Amino acid sequence: MKEYTEAELKYKAEAYCSKSEHCPAEVREKLRQWGAEPEVAERILSGLAKDRFLDTSRFCRAFVRDKYRFNQWGRMKIVQALRMKQLPSEDIEAGLEEIDEEEYSNVLKSLLAQKARGLKAGNDYERNSKLIRFAVSRGFAMDEVLRYIRQADEFLD
Image: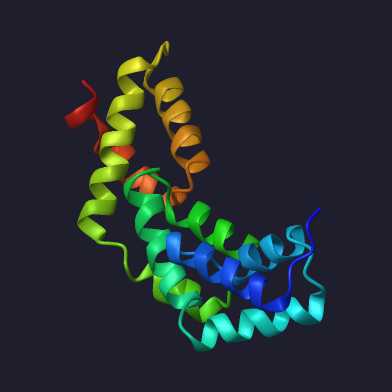
């Protein structure tokens, strides 16, 4: 494996951060893979943060937007993923404020409607329990799911 100088590592990390938003844990892992010593990695990370290549609140906002729009994840799954990336709670909360409530509701409704069309269930109870399990596994809160399941007859029949 090639040995990199600190300047080369910093340049590689800047290029990595320029391509897309990354959190400090991802960049730290990349630096480790490139062979950076922990103290060198921390110096590079602080430099990247100072130069605004790394910004945890910006990362959280982008992550939240992408996950609920494109992956159709619910709040719970998004929060769990951000916590696994070791991000500060304040930044996670700020990121969640990016969620447009109407768009979020529409995502949940369309997910449930789409899933219901493909479900095989003997009765409403069985269908509803399958829909609830599905939506909760996508990270939507139980109360959000139940609200739409109760209104389900409008869009499921």
